[in-house]
Length: 293
Length: 161
Image (cartoon, rainbow over all chains, first blue to last red; front, side, top):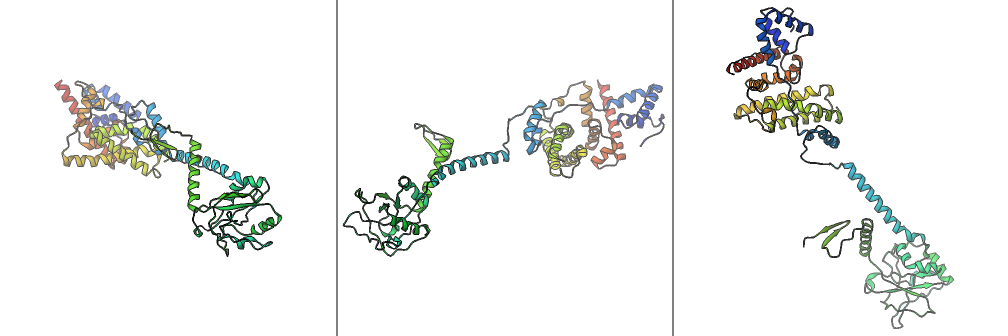
């Protein structure tokens, strides 16, 4: 592509290569010397040099669209530094920002939730022997006829599963007084679901022995008894007799409802959002959405 | 090519690439489309694109897109509309720079693109041949023809003035 010697016959090619900057420094000097020695060709040489475009500065204003994900924030900084007009100020929230926020929220919630729910476990419980006692004389309940053996045979049908936690909540004060509480749980369909059954607190040694045997039985298993029980109207026994506490058997649905309420309370406690009473609003978890009046 | 290198390409070459495209399309929307296409392709093929040849890669894609654009424009008989948002396109009478750009518009598309690649980007014949797919000799011939046409146009304008 290089021409060795410039002459009046091939000068145009040299001039064009000169304009296109395809010559070496030595060749350029040769062309310049040739033009000086041939002034008639200098006009043509200058004309060809004018065909070279001058540099123009055009700034592409939409550069921020071209930057890719992980560098979006950086791109905004770059474009601002370059003095471009940015039509919208955007800050992209990355997925790992969201993930971090969610995980922190979950950790806080779990910490608070477990703290409140583990508290009763510190208490020791001695549970559960049950012997429903008639409170009124007119209502008959089959009494335990075994004096030393387990009293479970004389229990009313026990079908509802009972959780230790639930009994504990009723027994905190009684345990502190070194008493034993009898909690008979009765199958709901025996009588009216709203039937209330007595809990007897016993303090005799025999009853303690009974309890030790009962402890071997899993409370969540259905226990079949031979007797049934009549609905009892709850009343207070005499002080000389065993102390009676009233307990309502609850179903699984109520437990779930209570659990959901507890979660809701935890979220409320964490966020401390208290919508004013005057404002009409819908509260969904930690968010309060005001309604139009 | 890493993401950082890609974004460096945007920072360093987007202006030049846009200038090359807008000088050919004269329409800012088409220029936006082509430059975004070029960078999108480079992003998609970033694993195989060498950062040292990224600029040539971008100009190659842009050149091919422009060739398609010209073919379609020829079919649709589009009229070039100069976007007024680009101040450099306001013609100023008796300005040499404006005159040369007016002369440039008179050139065939390929010659114009070669002149732009040569003068604005400073590519050699061989580099232009790689971008365009032409031989180096073809590039040289096209460029020399373009220079002579430009010279003729400039001389004629000077005579009128």
